[in-house]
Length: 422
Image: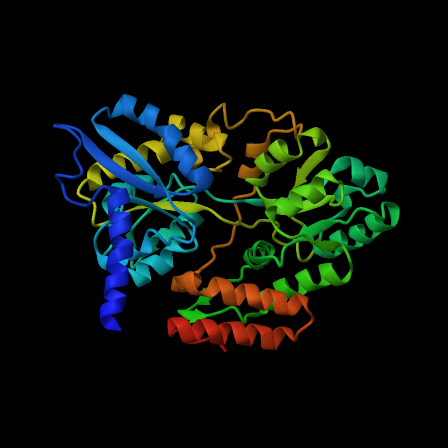
C-alpha cells in the first residue's frame, strides 16, 4: 500500500512538474540572460496576472513570466509542495487558507520579512494577519473583500422602504417583510446554504474560527451568525438560490431586491444585469445592534514564493510590480480585485465615478475598511470548509444550533488535532 501511495504521488507530481517546466536552474532559463518564473493562479486572478506581463516586461525585459491556470482547490499545487519538488515560483492562495499551508507545508515558503518591511504601513493592517507566523512574513497581501448591502433603489421605493431606516439586521428583516407584501414576486435576498453570508456575519461580530490556538466555531459569535441566517430564511426574506449563476438568474428576473456581498460583486452586477444600470445603490451593512459595527471582509488572496524556486528575487520583483505600483493595481482593479495596498486609494483611476451605481464605488468601499475585525482562520481552513458548510446547512434545516456547532468543531478537531474552545 505504501508503494502504491508513493507511486500515485510521484505520478501526480510529475504531471505538475511537466506543466511548471521543472525546478532546476537550467530549466528556469529559456536563453542566456533570461529568467523564467512560473505563477500558479486561477480564474480572474490568473487573467489579471496575465495582463500584468506586458507592463512588467517593460521594466524587467529579462524576466519571462508564465501563468499557470490552476484550480482553487489547489489540487495541482499541494502534491508538489508535499513532494518538495515541482512547485511553481509563485503561488496564489486564498488569504484564509494560507495559515493552513504554513502549517501543512513548513519550510516550503520563502521568508519575505526583510523584503516586505518597507510595506508594512502601506497595506491594511488586517491583511498581514494571514501571511505572518511567529513574527515573520511569508507572503504579500493582495486583495480584500470589504462587504456592503447592494439594493434595488427602484424596488425599495416601490415598496415604500427608506434605506436610511435600515440600521440593524432586524430592521432589514422587517423591511424584507414589507417588500414581500408590496411586491409578492420579489424577496429581499438569496442564499446558497451560505458559507459567504456566515463569514460576513462572523467577521462583523468579531468572531473567529480559531482562538488562542483552539477551534472556535462553537463560539457565541458563531451562534449569533447562524441564528441570523436561520431567521432570514424562516421569515421568508431570503430565498434559496442554487449557485452563483442561480443568483444572477433571480436578479435578472427581479426576484431578489438586495445582495449582501463584497466589493467584487459590483463587477458581477455591471456585467450580468447590465439592463438594471442606475437602479442599484450601495450602503454599509446593517449592524447587529444600533450603533454597532457595519464592516466586514469576505475573501481576498495572497501571493507567496515557493522555497523550491531558483529565482526567488525575480519572483518577488513580479509580486512587487503587480501589488505595489499604480500600473499593477490599475490592472487588478479592472478585474474587480480591490487592493489592500492603501496608497492606490489616492489614484485618479480609483476615484472614478461609476455610472452604473451613480457613485464613486471604490472610495465608498475604501471607507468600509477602517474597522474590519481581524479574523484568525488558524491552520484549519483546508479541513474546515466542509464541516462549516454542513453546520450551516443543518441549522437552516432546523437542527439544534448548539449540537450543529459541536458536530462541526468535533469534526475539525479530529482532522487537525486541535483542541476545541469550551
